[in-house]
Image (cartoon, rainbow, N blue to C red; front, top):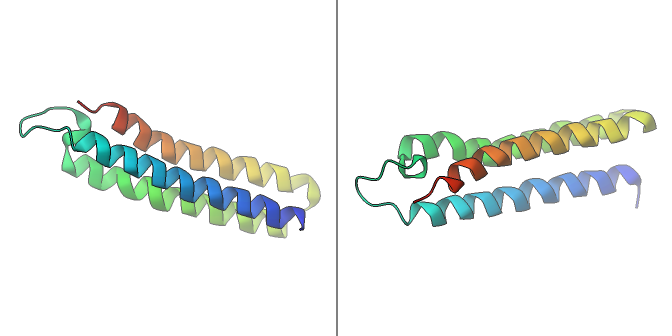
Length: 103
């Protein structure tokens, strides 16, 4: 397998698995909400903003990184991978922080 294919698959797995885990964690934390809880995870408006960031943000960083890996030189392949991975982890961290505020 070529190295760019391996890097692309790695980024895709991190994006999909990470988003799945964080969204599941957020929904599990939200189940503990009572009607008048003030925890951030209990705010539906906030969850409606964070969920797309976790899902589509990770996929966007994955896509940009894969394109960068495909069209760049060997020296830049690792940089594009790190850029994509850092972006994906930042998007996932937003959801993880929200889920951690659960009651």
